[in-house]
Image (cartoon, rainbow over all chains, first blue to last red; front, top):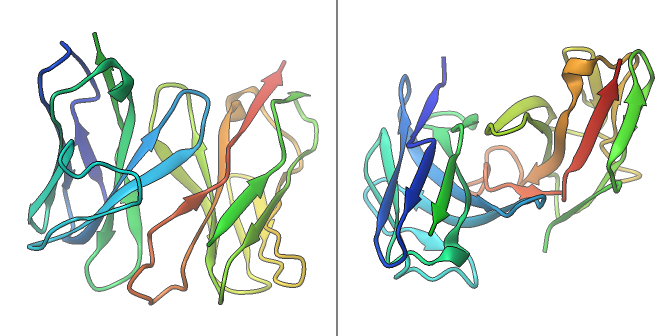
Length: 115
Length: 116
């Protein structure tokens, strides 16, 4: 149990376009989801925390207008990279926290390449 | 703020060698501690965790003990295999049960390569 599905696993987009990444909890309800970004050969940096039904909380230095997060249901959070640029190319990973207890699971990540 | 420091890599070992990856942390209160593993091109998988002092997490032959007196959570394995080659991340989150639980702070990661 406790499976998190993240799609797409890889995406290549043109500069200036927007890309949506989905994070779904398949067999549990996730009141809270976290979005991380990983630069090549570096650690993961928390971008934002999304809570179902409310606005996301962004970490310092993360542009909320560029990285739009929506958590409209207990099983789905989306991250939209708007007007993507090559410097947005990165590996994005979500994690979901189960409602009612304090365990959480990571998605398999999305490799975004902006050309 | 919270921080995690891992030993610098990369670490290269021969199969069946003993592995230690050091991890120390700085945090207020009593955080939960984790080791995650990332295989090439994949997301993170939880390897083991410990939620209070002196707890030992273990999985797949890996072990780590939560040492509050030394603020450490070193990862060990007695005999590594080629299949253990991956990037290992030490991480912490605020106290289990708190509203911020799950908001992880990661170490910089340690690349492990095991040769036959």
